[in-house]
Length: 56
Image (cartoon, rainbow, N blue to C red; front, side, top):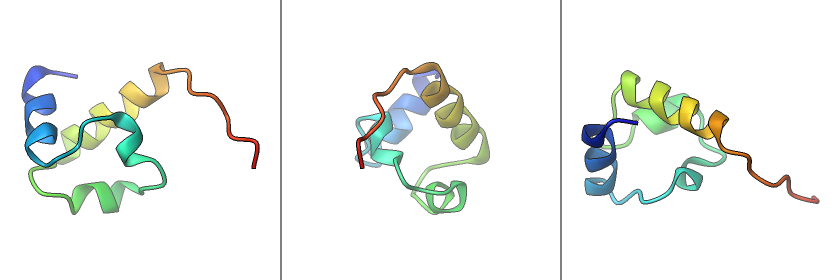
């Protein structure tokens, strides 16, 4: 993710990619200062992460 994307997300009070868990692309787009390019960058960054699966 570019520094500009990270800066915008931090200004919108998002600090971690997990802040977007259980949010659809539409819900993410409704957040302030979030564009389609940012949604794509968020999804690509989350795919690169290896997150533990929940037991539930």
